[in-house]
Length: 70
Image (tube, rainbow, N blue to C red; front, side, top):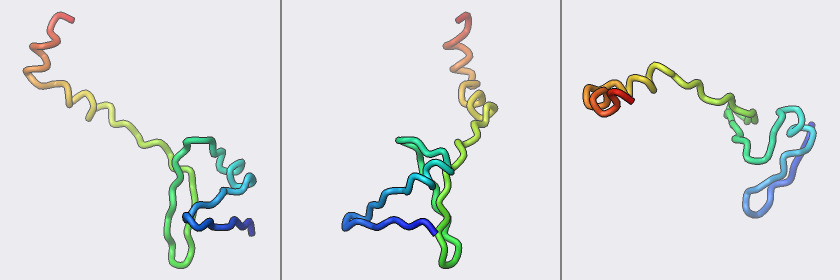
C-alpha cells in the first residue's frame, strides 16, 4: 500500500506512482468516491458536451433575427 501524510491544513502530496498511474498533471481535477470505509481517488473523465443542448440555446426567434445574414 502506498501512503501519504496529511498536513495540519488537511493537505497531502499524491505519491508519484499514483500520479503516474492516473496520468495526473498540474491543474487536473481529482474525483473521490466514498464506498463504505474506503475512498477511491480517480481522474474524472471530462463531461460529455451535449451538442444539441448547446445548439438549442441559440435557436430562439430573437436569435434567428439577430444573426440573420451573418
